[in-house]
Image (cartoon, rainbow, N blue to C red; front, top):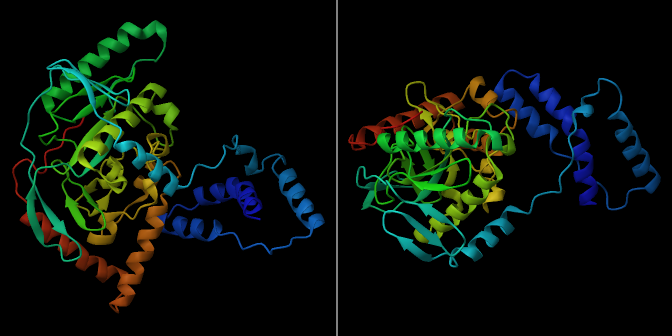
Length: 385
């Protein structure tokens, strides 16, 4: 009966979204979505007549004038389970190797990836210390990247059509020159799907700025050194679908680039995240200081699980919050990871016998202490268009 449950939930989805958009407070909205998306279990045997009547009535309601169900879009088949995506991605990692290269011009890999390497620049040598969980003690000095952060350039974008080919090339070259001057990212994927190395992988780049992330064993703060920065040449608006923001060629190239980098550095899927997931503002202790890819990042198309479902490290470990502007930036698609993190914070506060507010204040003090212990050189530099 699971397919029936999923079908009935999809019928309710427009109504749930409509109700959620009417709740201005982000916390109330999250709580409502958590309740509304839990469908009561169906009995093993459902009378056929009752099931037919229910489905017919629900379907007919979608066509009542003014009913929010008129907003329903074409229903796509359900994506593959995240575990299967991870297994499929892992099975291809060892297959990626360098096939051909010409120094200062290009590199070609076995999965079809071609890197344009002319003009690659140096920056700060990569160096960072691991912060261990749960003690937050600093450990060994490292020089290997541990993850990937995906960005959008939010730069000037020309119309993507044959009549504007010359302009697209001109704008793209200006962007490449600017990013190399500013040492902004490690890679740029242009509108035609070409992958340009901006800053060499052995160095940091100024792409992450004030940021927080964590995996099962470590916490990462200010991720310029720990993470590689991959930017899509794109300008986005709240709620854009990937097809509105990037081209199919960019997505294909991003998948190939992700496969290569994960194979080269043994990067976990947990550490393949978007700028919006890691960016923070230390002054007001809120997440989402930068909101590029706050929604609709094509994780599955890149061979990754949907990492919007992961806990938000800045909230869980350092007590950060978020505001309505951040919720708006997600385009109404609130991350499951936010729900999970809010629940974890409540449970942790309850276990310590305090309310949520003083518990978060303790976590914020831990962040201030960690921030004070970080080296100042290059850690907080961040470039934006």
